Image 1 (cartoon, rainbow, N blue to C red):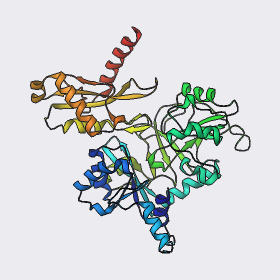
Image 2 (cartoon, one colour; image 1 turned 180 degrees about the vertical axis):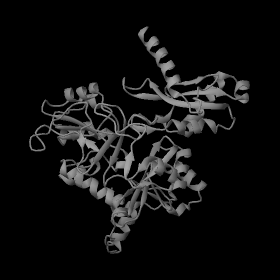
Image 3 (cartoon, one colour; image 1 turned 90 degrees about the vertical axis):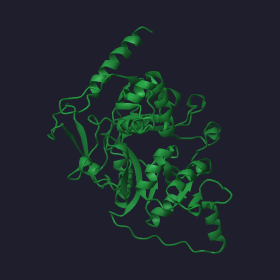
Image 4 (cartoon, one colour; image 1 turned 135 degrees about the vertical axis):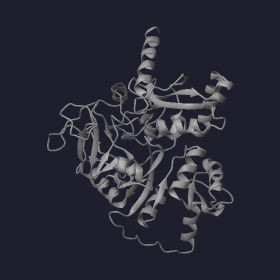
Length: 424
Protein backbone atom coordinates (compact mmCIF):
# COMPACT_ATOMS: atom_id res chain seq x y z
CA UNK A 1 0.00 0.00 0.00
CA UNK A 2 2.89 2.38 0.76
CA UNK A 3 4.32 1.85 -2.72
CA UNK A 4 0.96 2.30 -4.46
CA UNK A 5 0.15 5.51 -2.58
CA UNK A 6 3.65 6.86 -3.29
CA UNK A 7 3.33 6.17 -7.03
CA UNK A 8 -0.12 7.77 -7.13
CA UNK A 9 1.12 10.86 -5.28
CA UNK A 10 4.06 11.09 -7.68
CA UNK A 11 1.79 10.54 -10.72
CA UNK A 12 3.96 7.61 -11.82
CA UNK A 13 1.77 5.09 -13.69
CA UNK A 14 2.12 1.42 -12.77
CA UNK A 15 0.65 -1.97 -13.67
CA UNK A 16 -1.13 -4.34 -11.29
CA UNK A 17 -0.28 -7.92 -12.27
CA UNK A 18 -1.54 -11.07 -10.54
CA UNK A 19 1.08 -12.95 -8.55
CA UNK A 20 -0.51 -16.18 -9.77
CA UNK A 21 0.19 -15.45 -13.43
CA UNK A 22 2.01 -18.09 -15.44
CA UNK A 23 5.11 -17.39 -17.51
CA UNK A 24 2.90 -17.07 -20.61
CA UNK A 25 0.62 -14.53 -18.89
CA UNK A 26 3.48 -12.55 -17.33
CA UNK A 27 5.27 -12.27 -20.65
CA UNK A 28 2.13 -10.87 -22.25
CA UNK A 29 1.59 -8.39 -19.39
CA UNK A 30 5.22 -7.24 -19.32
CA UNK A 31 5.39 -6.70 -23.07
CA UNK A 32 2.03 -4.94 -23.28
CA UNK A 33 2.61 -2.54 -20.40
CA UNK A 34 6.28 -1.86 -21.31
CA UNK A 35 7.40 -2.10 -17.69
CA UNK A 36 10.76 -0.62 -16.67
CA UNK A 37 10.80 -1.57 -12.97
CA UNK A 38 9.41 -4.60 -11.15
CA UNK A 39 8.45 -4.94 -7.47
CA UNK A 40 7.89 -8.53 -6.37
CA UNK A 41 7.50 -10.59 -3.20
CA UNK A 42 10.36 -12.97 -2.31
CA UNK A 43 8.31 -16.13 -2.93
CA UNK A 44 7.57 -15.04 -6.51
CA UNK A 45 11.06 -13.72 -7.31
CA UNK A 46 12.47 -16.68 -9.27
CA UNK A 47 9.35 -16.89 -11.41
CA UNK A 48 9.50 -13.16 -12.15
CA UNK A 49 13.26 -13.23 -12.82
CA UNK A 50 12.95 -15.85 -15.55
CA UNK A 51 10.33 -13.80 -17.40
CA UNK A 52 12.10 -10.49 -16.83
CA UNK A 53 15.21 -11.98 -18.41
CA UNK A 54 13.22 -12.77 -21.57
CA UNK A 55 12.25 -9.11 -22.03
CA UNK A 56 15.76 -7.87 -21.29
CA UNK A 57 15.02 -6.24 -17.93
CA UNK A 58 18.24 -5.64 -15.93
CA UNK A 59 18.63 -7.49 -12.63
CA UNK A 60 19.06 -4.12 -10.90
CA UNK A 61 15.57 -3.01 -11.92
CA UNK A 62 13.87 -5.70 -9.84
CA UNK A 63 13.02 -4.78 -6.24
CA UNK A 64 11.65 -6.72 -3.28
CA UNK A 65 8.48 -5.89 -1.36
CA UNK A 66 7.43 -7.62 1.85
CA UNK A 67 10.87 -8.91 2.78
CA UNK A 68 14.54 -9.00 1.82
CA UNK A 69 16.54 -11.06 -0.70
CA UNK A 70 20.32 -10.93 -1.00
CA UNK A 71 21.43 -9.18 -4.17
CA UNK A 72 18.22 -7.16 -4.57
CA UNK A 73 17.19 -3.81 -3.17
CA UNK A 74 14.06 -3.91 -1.03
CA UNK A 75 11.40 -1.24 -0.69
CA UNK A 76 11.74 -1.18 3.09
CA UNK A 77 15.52 -0.92 2.77
CA UNK A 78 15.27 2.04 0.40
CA UNK A 79 12.84 3.80 2.74
CA UNK A 80 15.15 3.20 5.71
CA UNK A 81 18.19 4.54 3.82
CA UNK A 82 16.25 7.63 2.78
CA UNK A 83 15.36 8.32 6.41
CA UNK A 84 18.91 7.67 7.58
CA UNK A 85 20.46 10.22 5.21
CA UNK A 86 17.72 12.75 5.90
CA UNK A 87 16.25 12.71 2.39
CA UNK A 88 13.21 14.97 2.28
CA UNK A 89 9.98 13.45 0.93
CA UNK A 90 9.16 14.65 -2.56
CA UNK A 91 6.01 16.72 -2.83
CA UNK A 92 3.00 15.33 -4.65
CA UNK A 93 2.85 16.19 -8.33
CA UNK A 94 -0.38 17.61 -9.73
CA UNK A 95 -2.55 15.30 -11.80
CA UNK A 96 -5.30 16.04 -14.30
CA UNK A 97 -8.55 14.13 -14.69
CA UNK A 98 -7.13 12.14 -17.60
CA UNK A 99 -3.68 11.49 -16.08
CA UNK A 100 -3.03 7.74 -16.15
CA UNK A 101 -2.89 6.26 -12.63
CA UNK A 102 -2.39 2.56 -13.35
CA UNK A 103 -3.14 -0.39 -15.62
CA UNK A 104 -5.05 -3.43 -14.43
CA UNK A 105 -5.49 -6.55 -16.55
CA UNK A 106 -8.95 -7.80 -17.42
CA UNK A 107 -9.81 -10.81 -19.58
CA UNK A 108 -12.29 -10.45 -22.40
CA UNK A 109 -13.76 -12.21 -25.37
CA UNK A 110 -10.90 -11.06 -27.57
CA UNK A 111 -8.53 -13.54 -25.97
CA UNK A 112 -5.43 -12.34 -24.15
CA UNK A 113 -5.98 -10.10 -21.09
CA UNK A 114 -6.44 -6.42 -21.89
CA UNK A 115 -4.78 -3.61 -19.91
CA UNK A 116 -7.53 -1.37 -18.51
CA UNK A 117 -6.47 2.26 -18.10
CA UNK A 118 -7.54 3.83 -14.79
CA UNK A 119 -7.02 7.57 -14.50
CA UNK A 120 -6.67 9.80 -11.44
CA UNK A 121 -10.09 11.19 -12.31
CA UNK A 122 -11.54 7.66 -12.25
CA UNK A 123 -10.05 7.02 -8.81
CA UNK A 124 -11.19 10.31 -7.28
CA UNK A 125 -14.74 9.90 -8.53
CA UNK A 126 -14.85 6.29 -7.32
CA UNK A 127 -13.78 7.39 -3.83
CA UNK A 128 -16.44 10.10 -3.84
CA UNK A 129 -19.05 7.47 -4.71
CA UNK A 130 -17.85 5.31 -1.81
CA UNK A 131 -18.18 8.18 0.65
CA UNK A 132 -21.73 9.00 -0.47
CA UNK A 133 -23.02 5.44 -0.05
CA UNK A 134 -21.09 4.88 3.18
CA UNK A 135 -18.52 2.50 1.76
CA UNK A 136 -14.76 2.48 1.46
CA UNK A 137 -12.48 0.11 -0.43
CA UNK A 138 -11.50 -2.92 1.67
CA UNK A 139 -7.79 -2.26 1.11
CA UNK A 140 -7.92 1.13 2.89
CA UNK A 141 -10.77 0.34 5.29
CA UNK A 142 -8.51 0.15 8.33
CA UNK A 143 -6.90 3.50 7.51
CA UNK A 144 -10.19 5.33 7.10
CA UNK A 145 -11.93 3.76 10.12
CA UNK A 146 -8.99 3.71 12.51
CA UNK A 147 -9.28 -0.06 13.02
CA UNK A 148 -6.69 -2.81 12.76
CA UNK A 149 -6.38 -4.77 9.53
CA UNK A 150 -5.69 -8.52 9.85
CA UNK A 151 -4.04 -10.25 6.85
CA UNK A 152 -2.06 -13.49 7.54
CA UNK A 153 -4.14 -16.68 7.26
CA UNK A 154 -2.78 -18.19 10.45
CA UNK A 155 -3.59 -15.06 12.46
CA UNK A 156 -7.20 -14.49 11.42
CA UNK A 157 -8.80 -16.98 13.82
CA UNK A 158 -6.80 -15.77 16.83
CA UNK A 159 -7.10 -12.09 15.95
CA UNK A 160 -10.86 -12.30 15.47
CA UNK A 161 -11.10 -13.10 19.18
CA UNK A 162 -8.45 -10.73 20.52
CA UNK A 163 -9.22 -7.80 18.21
CA UNK A 164 -13.03 -8.27 18.00
CA UNK A 165 -13.27 -7.98 14.22
CA UNK A 166 -16.36 -6.10 13.04
CA UNK A 167 -15.99 -6.50 9.27
CA UNK A 168 -14.89 -9.55 7.32
CA UNK A 169 -13.63 -10.01 3.76
CA UNK A 170 -13.05 -13.78 3.54
CA UNK A 171 -11.13 -16.69 5.04
CA UNK A 172 -10.87 -20.37 4.00
CA UNK A 173 -11.46 -21.70 7.54
CA UNK A 174 -14.46 -19.51 8.11
CA UNK A 175 -16.57 -22.12 9.94
CA UNK A 176 -14.00 -22.57 12.73
CA UNK A 177 -13.53 -18.86 13.46
CA UNK A 178 -15.31 -16.97 16.25
CA UNK A 179 -17.41 -14.40 14.37
CA UNK A 180 -19.48 -13.17 17.30
CA UNK A 181 -18.27 -9.58 16.85
CA UNK A 182 -18.76 -9.33 13.07
CA UNK A 183 -21.42 -6.84 12.01
CA UNK A 184 -20.86 -6.59 8.25
CA UNK A 185 -19.75 -9.15 5.66
CA UNK A 186 -18.96 -7.82 2.18
CA UNK A 187 -18.90 -9.97 -0.96
CA UNK A 188 -17.38 -9.05 -4.30
CA UNK A 189 -15.78 -10.34 -7.54
CA UNK A 190 -18.65 -12.71 -8.38
CA UNK A 191 -22.33 -13.37 -7.77
CA UNK A 192 -23.09 -14.35 -4.17
CA UNK A 193 -25.29 -17.49 -4.17
CA UNK A 194 -28.24 -17.29 -1.73
CA UNK A 195 -27.07 -20.44 0.07
CA UNK A 196 -23.64 -18.91 0.75
CA UNK A 197 -25.21 -15.67 1.95
CA UNK A 198 -27.46 -17.66 4.29
CA UNK A 199 -24.44 -19.58 5.59
CA UNK A 200 -22.65 -16.34 6.46
CA UNK A 201 -25.74 -15.02 8.21
CA UNK A 202 -25.91 -18.21 10.26
CA UNK A 203 -22.25 -17.85 11.32
CA UNK A 204 -22.56 -14.22 12.40
CA UNK A 205 -24.78 -12.38 14.93
CA UNK A 206 -28.47 -11.84 14.16
CA UNK A 207 -28.00 -8.10 13.64
CA UNK A 208 -25.17 -8.57 11.11
CA UNK A 209 -25.65 -7.86 7.40
CA UNK A 210 -24.27 -9.55 4.29
CA UNK A 211 -23.98 -7.31 1.23
CA UNK A 212 -22.74 -7.61 -2.33
CA UNK A 213 -22.47 -5.42 -5.41
CA UNK A 214 -21.53 -5.40 -9.07
CA UNK A 215 -18.41 -4.03 -10.68
CA UNK A 216 -15.59 -4.69 -13.10
CA UNK A 217 -12.06 -3.46 -13.75
CA UNK A 218 -13.36 -1.03 -16.37
CA UNK A 219 -15.44 0.71 -13.65
CA UNK A 220 -12.39 1.22 -11.39
CA UNK A 221 -14.10 -0.61 -8.53
CA UNK A 222 -17.89 -0.84 -8.68
CA UNK A 223 -21.04 0.22 -10.51
CA UNK A 224 -23.80 -1.00 -8.20
CA UNK A 225 -24.00 -1.77 -4.51
CA UNK A 226 -26.57 -3.05 -2.08
CA UNK A 227 -27.83 -0.52 0.45
CA UNK A 228 -28.82 -1.08 4.05
CA UNK A 229 -32.34 -0.83 5.40
CA UNK A 230 -33.24 2.72 6.37
CA UNK A 231 -30.53 4.47 4.34
CA UNK A 232 -31.29 7.11 1.69
CA UNK A 233 -33.70 8.94 4.02
CA UNK A 234 -35.52 5.75 4.89
CA UNK A 235 -35.99 4.58 1.31
CA UNK A 236 -33.09 2.14 1.30
CA UNK A 237 -33.85 -1.57 1.50
CA UNK A 238 -31.45 -4.52 1.48
CA UNK A 239 -32.71 -7.11 -1.01
CA UNK A 240 -30.78 -10.43 -0.87
CA UNK A 241 -29.80 -11.65 -4.34
CA UNK A 242 -29.94 -8.18 -5.88
CA UNK A 243 -26.83 -6.42 -7.17
CA UNK A 244 -28.17 -3.27 -5.52
CA UNK A 245 -28.57 0.26 -6.81
CA UNK A 246 -26.43 2.33 -9.15
CA UNK A 247 -23.66 4.26 -7.45
CA UNK A 248 -24.03 8.08 -7.50
CA UNK A 249 -23.39 9.54 -10.95
CA UNK A 250 -23.65 6.17 -12.68
CA UNK A 251 -25.97 5.82 -15.68
CA UNK A 252 -27.12 2.45 -17.02
CA UNK A 253 -28.93 1.07 -20.06
CA UNK A 254 -30.13 -2.41 -20.96
CA UNK A 255 -29.57 -2.85 -24.69
CA UNK A 256 -30.65 -5.46 -27.22
CA UNK A 257 -28.17 -7.09 -29.61
CA UNK A 258 -29.25 -4.65 -32.35
CA UNK A 259 -28.35 -1.68 -30.12
CA UNK A 260 -31.93 -0.63 -29.28
CA UNK A 261 -33.22 -0.14 -25.74
CA UNK A 262 -34.63 -3.27 -24.11
CA UNK A 263 -38.09 -3.16 -22.54
CA UNK A 264 -38.82 -3.56 -18.83
CA UNK A 265 -37.95 -7.10 -17.64
CA UNK A 266 -36.36 -7.92 -21.03
CA UNK A 267 -32.92 -9.51 -21.02
CA UNK A 268 -30.20 -7.47 -22.69
CA UNK A 269 -26.63 -6.24 -22.32
CA UNK A 270 -25.75 -3.82 -19.53
CA UNK A 271 -24.17 -0.53 -20.67
CA UNK A 272 -22.68 1.89 -18.13
CA UNK A 273 -21.55 5.51 -18.17
CA UNK A 274 -19.88 7.45 -15.35
CA UNK A 275 -16.72 9.45 -14.54
CA UNK A 276 -15.35 6.31 -12.85
CA UNK A 277 -15.53 4.34 -16.13
CA UNK A 278 -12.13 3.74 -17.75
CA UNK A 279 -11.25 5.74 -20.88
CA UNK A 280 -10.28 2.47 -22.58
CA UNK A 281 -7.67 -0.22 -23.03
CA UNK A 282 -3.96 0.45 -23.34
CA UNK A 283 -2.72 0.03 -26.92
CA UNK A 284 -5.82 -1.86 -28.07
CA UNK A 285 -7.92 0.22 -30.46
CA UNK A 286 -9.82 -2.82 -31.72
CA UNK A 287 -11.10 -3.65 -28.23
CA UNK A 288 -11.79 0.03 -27.53
CA UNK A 289 -14.07 0.31 -30.56
CA UNK A 290 -15.89 -2.87 -29.55
CA UNK A 291 -16.33 -1.98 -25.87
CA UNK A 292 -16.65 1.82 -25.60
CA UNK A 293 -19.39 3.54 -27.63
CA UNK A 294 -20.12 7.28 -27.28
CA UNK A 295 -18.96 7.28 -23.67
CA UNK A 296 -20.83 4.09 -22.81
CA UNK A 297 -19.10 0.94 -21.54
CA UNK A 298 -20.57 -2.22 -23.05
CA UNK A 299 -20.08 -4.61 -20.14
CA UNK A 300 -20.67 -7.73 -22.22
CA UNK A 301 -22.82 -9.22 -19.46
CA UNK A 302 -25.50 -11.55 -20.87
CA UNK A 303 -24.00 -11.50 -24.37
CA UNK A 304 -20.33 -11.99 -23.62
CA UNK A 305 -18.80 -15.47 -23.55
CA UNK A 306 -16.51 -14.45 -20.69
CA UNK A 307 -16.89 -16.64 -17.60
CA UNK A 308 -16.55 -15.83 -13.92
CA UNK A 309 -14.73 -18.66 -12.14
CA UNK A 310 -13.95 -18.31 -8.42
CA UNK A 311 -14.48 -14.58 -8.76
CA UNK A 312 -12.05 -14.15 -11.67
CA UNK A 313 -12.75 -13.50 -15.33
CA UNK A 314 -11.92 -16.30 -17.76
CA UNK A 315 -11.78 -15.76 -21.51
CA UNK A 316 -12.64 -18.86 -23.58
CA UNK A 317 -10.67 -17.39 -26.48
CA UNK A 318 -7.53 -17.18 -24.33
CA UNK A 319 -7.81 -20.90 -23.52
CA UNK A 320 -8.42 -21.70 -27.19
CA UNK A 321 -5.32 -19.74 -28.18
CA UNK A 322 -3.19 -21.65 -25.67
CA UNK A 323 -4.42 -24.99 -27.06
CA UNK A 324 -3.69 -23.88 -30.61
CA UNK A 325 -0.04 -23.03 -29.85
CA UNK A 326 0.79 -26.48 -28.44
CA UNK A 327 4.16 -27.32 -30.05
CA UNK A 328 2.91 -30.65 -31.46
CA UNK A 329 0.00 -28.98 -33.34
CA UNK A 330 -2.43 -31.61 -32.10
CA UNK A 331 -5.71 -29.91 -33.05
CA UNK A 332 -7.22 -28.32 -36.16
CA UNK A 333 -10.12 -26.61 -34.36
CA UNK A 334 -11.24 -25.86 -30.81
CA UNK A 335 -13.94 -23.98 -28.96
CA UNK A 336 -14.35 -23.32 -25.24
CA UNK A 337 -17.55 -22.47 -23.35
CA UNK A 338 -18.93 -22.49 -19.82
CA UNK A 339 -20.81 -25.55 -18.55
CA UNK A 340 -22.28 -26.73 -15.25
CA UNK A 341 -19.88 -28.18 -12.73
CA UNK A 342 -18.77 -25.21 -10.65
CA UNK A 343 -18.84 -24.75 -6.88
CA UNK A 344 -22.48 -23.67 -7.02
CA UNK A 345 -25.42 -24.41 -9.30
CA UNK A 346 -24.98 -20.97 -10.88
CA UNK A 347 -21.24 -21.08 -11.58
CA UNK A 348 -19.99 -22.30 -14.95
CA UNK A 349 -16.58 -23.82 -15.61
CA UNK A 350 -14.63 -23.95 -18.90
CA UNK A 351 -15.02 -26.99 -21.17
CA UNK A 352 -13.14 -27.49 -24.44
CA UNK A 353 -14.27 -29.28 -27.59
CA UNK A 354 -11.39 -30.15 -29.91
CA UNK A 355 -11.00 -31.50 -33.45
CA UNK A 356 -7.86 -33.59 -33.91
CA UNK A 357 -5.31 -32.66 -36.56
CA UNK A 358 -3.40 -35.30 -38.52
CA UNK A 359 -0.72 -35.25 -35.82
CA UNK A 360 -3.40 -35.53 -33.15
CA UNK A 361 -5.05 -38.53 -34.80
CA UNK A 362 -1.68 -40.24 -35.03
CA UNK A 363 -1.05 -39.62 -31.33
CA UNK A 364 -4.50 -40.82 -30.26
CA UNK A 365 -7.45 -39.03 -28.64
CA UNK A 366 -6.65 -39.96 -25.03
CA UNK A 367 -3.00 -38.97 -25.40
CA UNK A 368 -3.98 -35.62 -26.96
CA UNK A 369 -6.39 -34.81 -24.13
CA UNK A 370 -3.67 -35.61 -21.60
CA UNK A 371 -1.08 -33.53 -23.49
CA UNK A 372 -3.39 -30.51 -23.75
CA UNK A 373 -4.31 -30.77 -20.07
CA UNK A 374 -0.64 -30.72 -19.08
CA UNK A 375 0.00 -27.84 -21.51
CA UNK A 376 -2.76 -25.66 -20.06
CA UNK A 377 -1.52 -26.30 -16.53
CA UNK A 378 1.88 -24.99 -17.60
CA UNK A 379 0.57 -21.91 -19.40
CA UNK A 380 -2.66 -20.84 -17.68
CA UNK A 381 -3.58 -19.85 -14.14
CA UNK A 382 -5.39 -22.61 -12.27
CA UNK A 383 -8.81 -20.94 -12.37
CA UNK A 384 -8.62 -20.93 -16.20
CA UNK A 385 -8.12 -24.69 -16.53
CA UNK A 386 -10.88 -26.61 -18.32
CA UNK A 387 -12.46 -28.09 -15.21
CA UNK A 388 -15.45 -29.03 -17.35
CA UNK A 389 -13.24 -31.39 -19.34
CA UNK A 390 -11.80 -31.71 -22.85
CA UNK A 391 -13.92 -33.55 -25.42
CA UNK A 392 -12.82 -34.77 -28.84
CA UNK A 393 -15.43 -34.17 -31.57
CA UNK A 394 -15.46 -34.70 -35.33
CA UNK A 395 -16.30 -31.06 -36.04
CA UNK A 396 -17.20 -27.78 -34.34
CA UNK A 397 -20.72 -26.66 -35.37
CA UNK A 398 -20.71 -23.35 -37.27
CA UNK A 399 -23.36 -21.00 -38.61
CA UNK A 400 -23.62 -20.14 -42.32
CA UNK A 401 -21.45 -17.11 -41.64
CA UNK A 402 -18.77 -19.23 -39.96
CA UNK A 403 -19.60 -18.23 -36.38
CA UNK A 404 -19.00 -20.99 -33.83
CA UNK A 405 -22.26 -22.29 -32.36
CA UNK A 406 -21.09 -22.85 -28.79
CA UNK A 407 -24.71 -23.06 -27.67
CA UNK A 408 -25.23 -26.33 -29.59
CA UNK A 409 -22.29 -28.00 -27.86
CA UNK A 410 -23.22 -26.63 -24.44
CA UNK A 411 -26.84 -27.77 -24.66
CA UNK A 412 -25.77 -31.26 -25.71
CA UNK A 413 -23.35 -31.46 -22.79
CA UNK A 414 -25.89 -30.10 -20.28
CA UNK A 415 -28.40 -32.78 -21.26
CA UNK A 416 -25.79 -35.46 -20.57
CA UNK A 417 -24.75 -33.73 -17.35
CA UNK A 418 -28.31 -33.58 -15.99
CA UNK A 419 -28.98 -37.18 -16.99
CA UNK A 420 -25.84 -38.40 -15.24
CA UNK A 421 -26.62 -36.30 -12.16
CA UNK A 422 -30.16 -37.70 -11.91
CA UNK A 423 -28.76 -41.23 -11.67
CA UNK A 424 -26.67 -40.39 -8.60
